[in-house]
Every structure is written in structure tokens, then in C-alpha cells.
Length: 272
Ligand code: UDP
Ligand code: MN
Image (cartoon, rainbow, N blue to C red):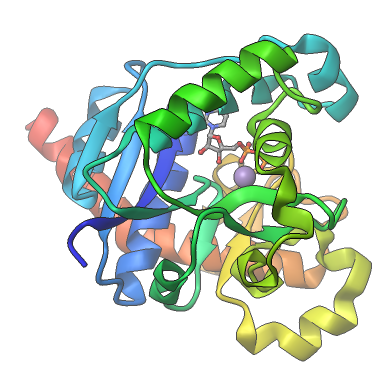
């Protein structure tokens, strides 16, 4: 088991706060696997040190960027070119199998059973269910696959959406039809921005949800949380009650498990 790992990615301090919630929410539900975070060189000392304490391994990676402004404009997400950095996860060959998790997720129930699945297993994307969402996927690290992915990206001219999801769906293009065992249940990657479109299903399957993914432009770390009255403030317009509930679940992990680590680390770096 020791050679299996959950892997996430943070190229800036905001995503790194998310990565800390990923780690602490996995520990809270009793994961038995290693926790790995890939980072670029641009993080602050406080964040980097806290990541060192929370994760089993911090791996510095080079930023890869699709530089594909045309397709990213179609998606209205200019910041996503850097998500190509994600494919560095295939280089982590010391692990026999990994589960990649975006930094904008919170784990609500144990998901160690994902390691029973094969590459490439992922859940359907709610916007286009014949594509998988690349926020949660099971894969087998292999430098050869990494090289093929880079070559494929160069040859294709990046990806059809400008981000990693288009690239990975084009590369693992048989996902949609080859093997139903590689289709994860939606409960392993519930994109919170799509709750609104099917609230009765969220209500019906609420207790089965294992992973909530805050895909989209609004990230939980951009909001403010008041622990006294457990209220969120910030750009919450249009958020449905269930969406707010899951944003609160993220903030509870942040406040109860990540914040104390950040404060302790801050005291060590800046003793008064
Ligand atoms: N990411 C990062 N820095 C960035 C943008 C993204 O490290 O500037 C990483 C982070 O792990 C994030 C993932 O890439 O969760 C995918 O991006 P995002 O979650 O914003 O995409 P979405 O799920 O909203 O499509
Ligand atoms: Mn995401």
C-alpha cells in the first residue's frame, strides 16, 4: 500500500490553501495512502512549510503552460493554461498507482477504494458527460506516458479547451466507450456548480457524496468565513443552498484543521 498516493497540485498560494484542505480532509476520513503535492517555485515560505508538514511529500515541478489563449477564451477561463502542469503527475514513478485530485475539492468520505481501479478512471463531466472531468482520476505513473502526453500536446497544438481536461480526454479518448469500470460514479467528483441544475438528485443522493469539487471560477478560498456565526461572505450571488452547504464544509476543514497549522507555522517563522 505504501507505494500508492493521492496527488494534488498548487502553483500559487490560493491553490495551496486548497491543497491543504485536500490533505486534511483525506486525513480526517482516515486515508491509508501517501499524500503528495506538486508545487512550483513561487509559493511563500509559510505556505511551503505548512505543505511540508501536512503532506508526506512535496515535489517541485516545472510549470507547463498551454499558452492557448484562443481556446481558453472560449472557456472564459484565461487562468487554466497552467493546468498543463498537472501532467507532471505521471512522472511520480516511485508510486505504483495514484489518484490525482484537483486542489479545489473537499473529501467528505473515504475514497481509498479508488486504488482498486485502473488507468484511466474518472467521473463524467456534468457539462459534457462523454468527456471525463479531470479533477479526480486514477492513473499509473509512467515517464513513458508523460513523454507521450507532452508529444501529443505538441502535435495537437495544446488541447481543445486549452486546459488539461481537453488534452487528457483527447489522449484517453477511448474512456467514453471502452470500459464502464473506468467510469467512476459521479459521487466521487460532484461538481458543485452543477447542483443547481438537478437539485432533486442532490437531495436524493446527498449521503452518498464522497468528493465535492468546486470547479469553476469561484473558489472557496476567495470567500471569507466567520467562525462565530458560521457564515460565509463574499461573491455568493446565485449560489444555491446546497452549494453554500458544501462551501461551508470546505471552510470547516480550513478553520478546524488547516488554520491551526498555518498559525503554528507562522509563529515558528516569525517568533514575537
Ligand atoms: N491550478 C494551479 N494553479 C493555477 C490554476 C490551477 O495550481 O493557477 C491547479 C489546481 O490544482 C487546480 C487545478 O490546477 O485545482 C485545475 O484548475 P481548476 O481547479 O481551477 O479548474 P476547474 O476545476 O475549475 O476547471
Ligand atoms: Mn478543479
